[in-house]
Length: 197
Image (cartoon, rainbow, N blue to C red; front, top):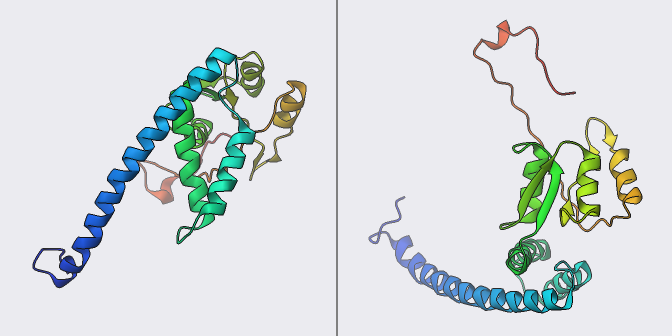
């Protein structure tokens, strides 16, 4: 069934689509106001020497928004949407740097991009201690460390680095990993596959 003006369903859809377009425009205008307020907050924090990231404030803000949510969007959707809005506004205040186990294009890079949102500067490092050191030295604002995977279980090194560096855990991300086998040969002709352990 095509979605053409002659279609009865299209006539019924039209007013709701128009309503969505109007609401989206209002949301964009309000997001602009929010971003301008965040820029002012960034200037005040910079003048006062305060950190850009305030996890307690962000946690309280998310909890408040979830409590105010009238529905029908579930609480988890509200939390996810506003985490992205907050990250984008925070990155306007001062672009944040996130350290991760490199190089670019790895699963750690993908996780860093998923967690950090737009505007954050990804910084690859050759090993996990370098990631933690970058955060401890102030070379990065955040560091992404793996804490568990399905092959090895808990990654104890990461927890050691957090304790040794006197670092704080401020967020968590679960990244499903999917691997694909590709070859120019027929599957039956493949006798050996090499992989990272």
